[in-house]
Picture 1: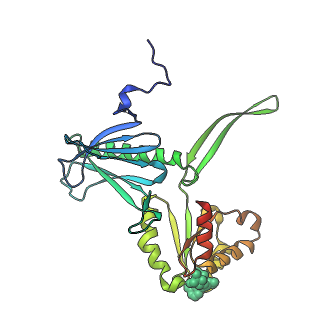
Picture 2: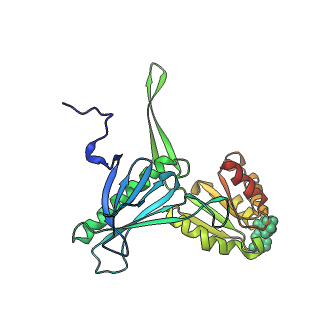
Picture 3: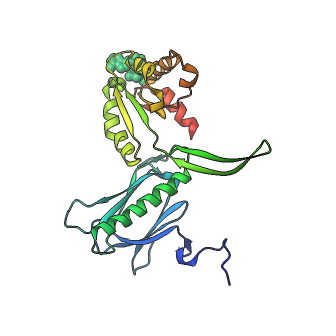
Length: 279
Ligand SMILES: Nc1ncnc2c1ncn2[C@@H]1O[C@H](COP(=O)(O)OP(=O)(O)OP(=O)(O)O)[C@@H](O)[C@H]1O
């Protein structure tokens, strides 16, 4: 008898969870600690394999995942490979009632065989699958472009199919190093740079050197090179960037460029209100 397509495929099901991928990997520091890892369309479920009962299962929502990469370990004699997923889930703050996004890194060692290349291939397969699944959970965040497949019949257009295509979101980041009592650049290198690397977002950093520098850069920039302009500063630099865009001959298109603001100033009223209302 043929299996109903709507029924879960039992070969991809473990502990009642239907997975896109299922694997067993070891802890990065201790080979004797093993985890079962299940990737579904919406979550990564990690369970410590242990004979003693207890709450060892952790579920990460893929909407909180910014990226995942496969890599080798620091020891060249190690045949194992690794994949690391980066999550920013909401968590309760220490000694506070509020919640905030906090970074969680999950790294696994893949040592299925003695061949390091085969292990790396498996780690890459996982990293790829986790990235793809998280992109589909948060298409706008990952810069997915919908491709519409249309068919023309007797002058009428019919939509056949929508495919989401991923292309890297290229960002120009403008930082005023004097902003926020000189803290903006430090905040960028200390926090933002790492997150951009984890999310594999290619960016160009512009550190402003004088008043109206950002305005000139934006006025002259080839905007087809960028998917977004992000300002890390107080409110002043954002106004410069908007003025620069509005002074261009192609200002009608230019002002459509997505703008972002990261709080780097002392007051950050605009960044706070924009981010508050976008939640
Ligand atoms: N390298 C620079 N040297 C001097 N002035 C700069 C430089 N880069 C930008 N500026 C100017 O500094 C002004 C204030 O910048 P911004 O709003 O980013 O910081 P801030 O005043 O520290 O922020 P906040 O108002 O929140 O304290 C901007 O209008 C900009 O023209």
